[in-house]
Image (cartoon, rainbow, N blue to C red; front, side, top):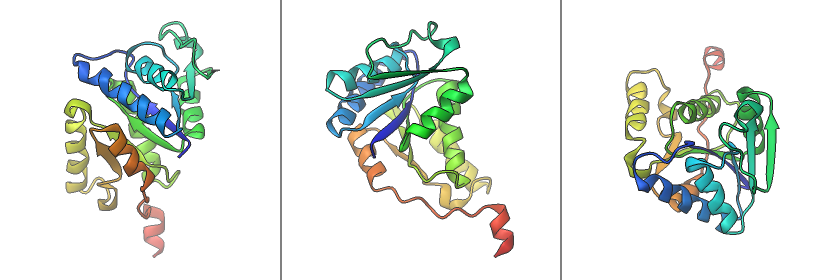
Length: 193
């Protein structure tokens, strides 16, 4: 893995553990020579993970839409800043650049970004690992929901564990490294077999 897309909040949240986890992830990425691909902001957890990668000698590519360039305060010191026209282009560019996707705590935007790439993996549109850095048990409700979806047969059983989860950045990156995607069985090819 050379490039990791990280989705996370443009605020710090209520617990200092969230920012500490973002900093630890940045350190781990730099140590492993993995380029951070993220939303391009200098504030919140987005800024914390980018600053941490940079402070530890790593590379950072930010992708930010024009409409958010000043609102999210684009990071002036990252390795490369890609300015795009829309949120859709931002997500597409991040997906194009990334070898995997990880969500740190964040709001609805973070959730939407993660769920989209998680869905794409289920559809066989990519075979890249998707994971949740479950800092301070932030994603426990989402993990429960994923299991509930599988229990209720709205998520195929082989996808139940597709979202890799850990509360430690290094451990989650190790899971990414050894990830093997499950076989994708869509409704189309299920009817053909």
